[in-house]
Image (cartoon, rainbow, N blue to C red; front, top):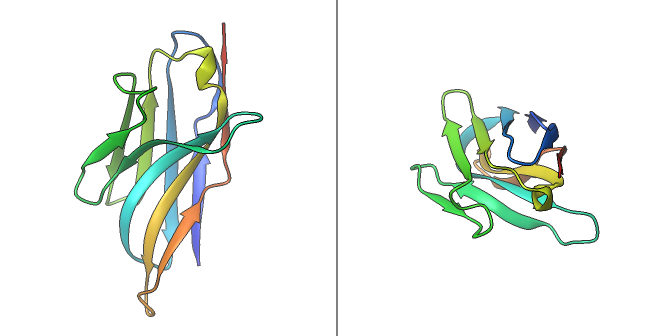
Length: 121
């Protein structure tokens, strides 16, 4: 099994910053892409940022220039640095990790438990 543990959410004023972390552990042979999604009340879950195993990144247009995704492969951890936060960034943020599991070498998509980010105006 693989477990994902998220941390770093909270309440911040507009213009502030937060850093999210998501650590993967368990039966991991290799991690491919790692990313962050968010879901605001009444809206569908949307991609925020993704980083490949090689370090290539992709961002939603709404966060470009404000958010930075990074990863530490030695720690199996993905980060999301969020700067210049806006009230419209308020949502539950979920990490997503594409894992190749040990022994079977089967590939699974795992989700974190979600962490609330609230930006006040």
